[in-house]
Length: 328
Image (cartoon, rainbow, N blue to C red):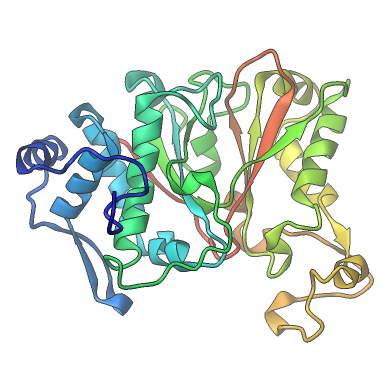
């Protein structure tokens, strides 16, 4: 664990026999070029990714998920190098939705955001090891996270196989019956507790307040977004009053603060960047929906019944894109 060879936790040594078995399962040759970060002269070969999967504790049975997840991570839009070195200290959130959740045994109920389940833990750890090793150019780039969060070790959540609204990935243009892996650079989750609200509207109002709180990073440029995690007990109330599209619009229109108040507390700079598009005397949303409406605010259904908690996961302010691919 010394010398920056791991994420701080013990790892399975990437012996050649284990890496070769992982390569065979995924269908790669070790020298295959899977991705690169040209501006930093970083090339990412199959053997690097297979070694990271072994070190993270992934089973070869997870190969279809790992192959798809690697495709997401290697997409330039994922910006894993930026996620590694930003002062925001973000992690790579992996979302798995569709039939693959049951096929591979992902936990989607109790402790869904921090599941005590090998597949969730190791798949999420693999993604963040790739960010850690490859995003820093093998240690040549300095990480700058001010405080970071535990999701920088592992952050993988899976949606319930049966949902009230259409599956998570349908918000990103995929068919309901498909299995999809999605990656987003995010901050840690913020718990939303409402045990006594009696309508779906007050549950959404509570969620909107969490999105629009003064400290949310995205007020700077309104270029990030949010994943809203809805638990079964909250979903029961929300679905009585709102479709997903209606809930989407409600949150966007409600999660706002006055620009003068944002300036007063120091959330809007005195010397404005023109890209900030501030209009004094108006209500400001941390989400600029005219740019990327389909992915700036998404909903996922997971968690266990019996407690009225949901969660808000803010995107990294520089994470303009979610990246998704179908598991094949």
